[in-house]
Image (cartoon, rainbow, N blue to C red):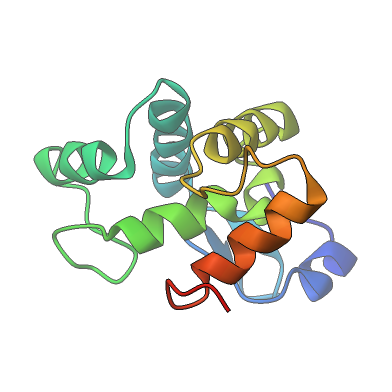
Length: 131
């Protein structure tokens, strides 16, 4: 899959699964695009970032930097990168992963609905002290 000339100009930095051809047009790298799809699918199937790390390690799939093991940070950034909807994953899959990530969020304030309670919780969270 190739982006148009204009899409390629505004695409910015090329991420894992994409490359620029000799004309500067962004295109997918088929084997790496499959890895990206697999990572999105594994996460949507309920796998943690750590489980995905070990899956990729066992499958001997090197990280974008060529390391043997992917970091959770790299996996998290990949799953948050909207650019993958340009020919690698569908908008629906991307949004489903985003919703799942949001529901898995460990933020203790997510369930706080009362504004005063929210403010109090925020103050408590600042260095663990009530200000």
